Length: 205
Image (cartoon, rainbow, N blue to C red; front, top):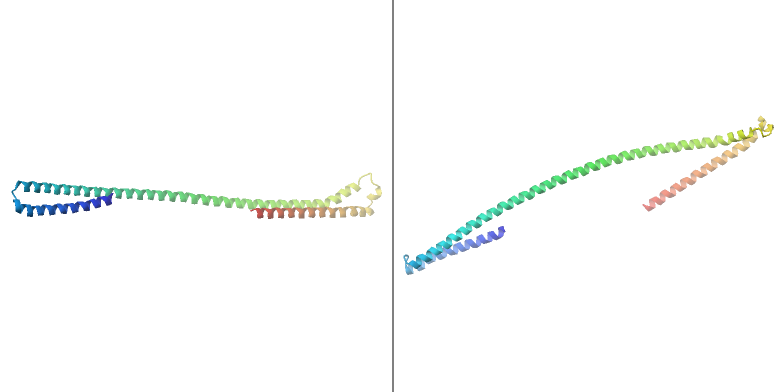
């Protein structure tokens, strides 16, 4: 719109210059022929001056419109800049909130990792305690079981003699060895299953 008004202003200036040239030529040519006091000359000259004044008024109106358009464009650009500034402020606040949430999430993740590590250590300690209890049980249970069985009243009293302790040893030692062998076999089997499951999980991921 501003460009069109500028073009119209240029055309009006050209038209004004043409009107000035017509008025001057009319005064020279027609005035010298008919005379300045001739009614036809005066009527044409008045009409030309009226056209010239109308052109001038239109040019002034066009300049006023051009100024208003420039003011409106400046106001519009200011509002757009203000909207952009507000949008940037809002985006900055949103990004700050996201960063704060990320920091809090990182803190929570670290806390969870610490708790998980402590839980893992506690589970390892419990597992070690259970293994120790199991080993002690396998070490003492066969001997105490056979001692209790051999001390029952329906066995011959000769078995209760201290010289027959070799019977208890023969029964206890192989039983204890079998118990430990079975325990270590179960442990190796469980470890093999755990390793296979971890490998499958890694391949799946």
